[in-house]
Image (cartoon, rainbow over all chains, first blue to last red):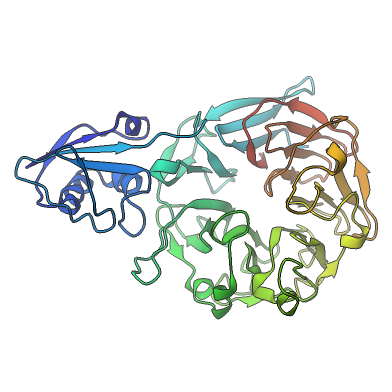
Amino acid sequence: MAQVHFTPHLRRFLSTPPTTVPGTTVSEVLEAVFAENPRLAGYLVDDQGRLRKHVAVFVDGDLVRDRLALSDPVGETGEIYVMQALSGG
Amino acid sequence: MTRRALVATRKGLFRLTRESSGRWTAALIAFPGDPVSMVLPATDDRPLFAALNLGHFGTKLHRSGDDGATWEECAVPAYPKDPENPKSLSQIWCLEGGSVSGALWAGTIPGGLFRSGDGGNTWNLNRALWEAPERRDWFGGGYDDPGIHSVCVDPENPRRVAVAVSCGGVWFSENDGETWTLKTRGMFADYMPAAKREEPGIQDPHRLVQCRTDSRVLWVQHHNGIFRSADYGETWDDLGPAAAPSAFGFAVASHPRDPETAWFIPAVKDSRRIPVDGRFVVSRTRDGGRTFEILREGLPEGPAYDLVFRHGLDVDETGETLVLGSSTGSLWVSENGGETWKLVSPHLPPIYAVRFDR
């Protein structure tokens, strides 16, 4: 089971407590997260299921490489952080 | 006279209210700090809608059934999954009510027209327009991708719909969007090679508006000037030569009852996009575009470099009250058809859209 943590900036828009879900890839983990919290999907991925441009996902400290199909592997005790860049003024 | 308006800005949704003293005031009512790209006022059978552009977290749509006191997030238009042509919603650029209760139109970037039949619970891409062969000619103007910024639903026959695209011409449907016809005869585009100058699918109408009581009459503030049609788009007259102090701009508002009257916000064309000579003015025609008056009373003496985006000008149903919001966050109201203007605030966030409310 993977532990998933979310950037606090998402809390302004919706509830995103840390969660523990099954999955062997980032895609499978996020699908399980979205099954629990369907509205969150539109905040993290675009219409084609790709990671949004300024959303970053780390698996065990490493930035995911496949932002399109989200195929990076997740271990049995994987720890995932969903973060975002901040910009503008 | 309309006493309220909504103001969509880069940093939240504001309400403009006329107090009993006659003074207009603007107050933040929702989404502090978030870009609001468009707002659609409530009607008897429709809640208030606000479209957000959250950047990192995408485009969102919220609705309020209690005049903005509370909001709920509803569905946004989504592009079909397509590995060959992978599009994703980047902005809701316009929102309008449709032909029946609960129906909504949304014009989007990149280049989508979507319809909801259930008040924003679900959306469907208008395939007829999406798959039109001429859509291949469309390209971005201002944004990287083409976008639909104007949807005019005919008040006399709401199954007649006209849509304007930057850059992709003006499209007409007689059957609530089942089929579309591209009509730009008379328009021209000096930014194209000579052979493509009059090509319909590359025209850049910055904004399309319709006279409410004479719906054959349409006005377009185009990249290359001002055009008017008196025959529902069959032919377009070039009003640019008469326009003063320039024919370039983004916004246009049509008088609701007088098909000869419209207002514009002229600017230096076209790569500079600042007021002519640093004087911010409104222009008005009252004779169908044969002549234009320059209206400046109550507007800054200058230097003033306000620019008005394409949805930054609105007129109420009397044709007397106008609201005008600039990209540098200045907001004005006129209660006499634009003859004089009152500054409401010079300090709002950049203004994307203004619309009179009930």
